[in-house]
Length: 507
Image (cartoon, rainbow, N blue to C red):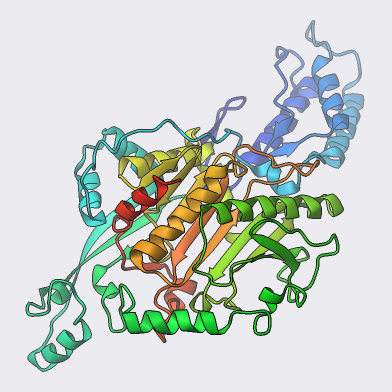
């Protein structure tokens, strides 16, 4: 609930009426001063930013004039009718001149205001040896309600442990053992099928809902790591597609150029996408052909090249202020070409959908708790043993992942070398240690200001990466559940942590 201090009205935040009520209360305050209650003492005018709206200079001058008018002796010299006329003029001018400040795009007026800064490191004091999310969730639920971690966790997340039961008739036992032959505990005892533990996690603010069931991870077609034969097939396909005579991106000349020209760096060059998502849509094309060959220096170089591309676009189009970078590695991850390449987009008015939802969630969290969403997210994952630091950058094994082994990389400064290098470390944990051969990565950078510089503040740079599964699996890794339902995940977020710690230590 929101308590309006001037009138002591309680308002439900979920009804989205806080800003409107503040504006109405403010106008009523002016009415009291002009005509209805001339005897009330002068009160300080509300802030010129009401309901996420920034008043123009004209409106602010009118408000100052209204509140500086002397009210004394219990009477006003002007007739009441003239007061009412003047009131209507003030309200009309107020409504006409109410508009967001021209220095920022509309959506930025609705941002959280607490600046983001990576919080001080804190040891995972509650779960130092936890190897499974199932154990972690059970421990969180068993803690007293007044425990600091319980309160912090419950502000942002909900968790439940459920038991799914079924009966395997004798006629189905042989087939069940065949279907789950990859199950690590063996299939002699089918209890892992007849009694399945399902853990659900829910982010109250982003509304991400994830269902964890380890059994689903070992369904037919499951491959934790590719066989040597399958690995050979994939590497051979990459080699067969390499070379200027076979690959457009290897040739450079057979790529489109942005209207402001091409940017070239040590490890990559830019091109314009010939089938655009958005008005401003370009490519970072690596000088390495294979999507699986990259290192920390290359990733840092990609970040710097992307920032330069965004600056050049912003110089031509100052309203283009919200930068995105995406990378689908391999055809399994929906890449149209094998050659390593990343997609750059910069939008006007707002971020793309999922980032915009996350931004709105951070605003609601701050309004409800007067805390920075990102600092709390890091602190919670750190307490659970699901976070690793690299300078001003933190890598999280996310507790409500959208797909297998999702990691979130958050930084307060995307220009810092640690950001690109930490992203590379997360990807190496997937490709080198887990054996992933297809992944999807998406990055949202902090917005640009009117001079084309990164406007660091309440919204950090954020990268999210997921494992897309085996390229040898003919099934899609997404379906109706992922599109229209919730997140269905088999891999435990703790599984990748030893590898993530090892890789980030080298940043």
